[in-house]
Image (cartoon, rainbow, N blue to C red; front, side, top):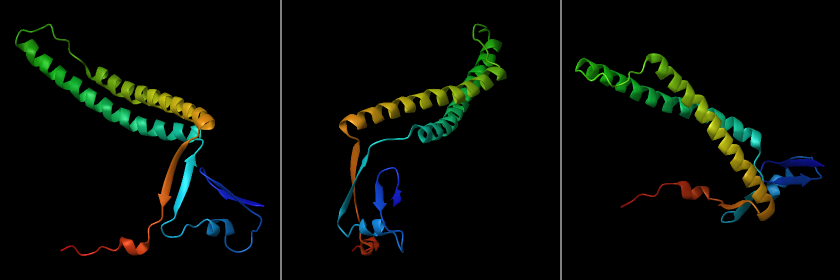
Amino acid sequence: MVEWGGLLSRCRCMSTQGSNPCLSAHQPKYGEAMKYEIRRIEIWPVIKIVFILSLFLGFLIGLLYGGLFLMIDAFSQVAAESGFDELNTFGGGFVIFIIIAFTFGLSFIYTLGAVIFVVLYNLLAGSIGGLRFEIATIDDRQKELTPVG
C-alpha cells in the first residue's frame, strides 16, 4: 500500500503502477468544489516561521524606537544649551540596548503567543472541528482577458 497526502488529507492506494491513481481520481472537473478541513497544525513549523518573522519585525521596531530616542537625545542636548538641564540624555549604548531588546523580546512574546494559539486551535479542532474551506476549480479559458469597450 502506498500513501500520498499532506497536511490536509491522506490518500491510500493499493497500486504503485504508472501514474498516481489517487491523485487522478481526485482531480475535480470544472465547476466542482474541493472541500478541506484543517484538523491539526504542527507546532514546530509554526515556531520556526513566527520566530524568524518576529526577529525581523522586532529589529525594525527596535530601529524605529532607537531613532526616536536619538532624536530625543538631540533635542535634549539643544535644550540643555538653552538652560533646560532637566531633560535626560540617552547614549548610543541605550539605543543599541533598545534595538536588541525589541528584537529578541518581541520574538519571544510573538512566538509564545503563536504556540498558545496553535495548542488551543488543536484542542478545539479536535473536539468541535477545524476550519473548513472550499476551493473551486477555474477553467483556463477564463484567464484570458476580454477587451473592454
